[in-house]
Image 1: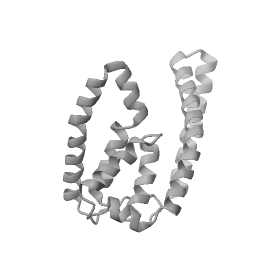
Image 2: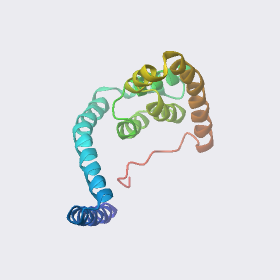
Image 3: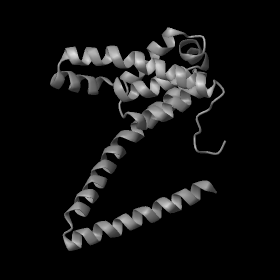
Image 4: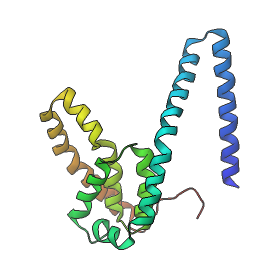
Length: 177
């Protein structure tokens, strides 16, 4: 029942935005026209990115065994778990849009909470395309220094959050289960 209420609210918000965009176009209100163009551009980008990404998350869920995740990202994985979380996050495309569903799958397969938080934070700062872009504009020495500072901080914050929340903390998937 919660889904339909949220769905209805989303449809109402989208309809109101459509009315706003139509009025903006009719009246020549430039900020409204630009925001409608930005919404269309963002929607096209997400429509091209999310279906293949969710397909890959589904394949990951089906093909990767629980024991593999537990051994490499579980409670007893130690530093190896944090390393693999950063490597996995660095190779992702789509940022947090893809990282959150994959994080849910990893938790269901036995990844520890500290490793999951490391994965989520690393998905925001360690992606390869972003790193190449950064290095080309700011230089490789800046990129190396940023990684040298940010990766230990990501791991430290992830471990603190995991100890604060406790290992029994579960990410909710919105299904109410």
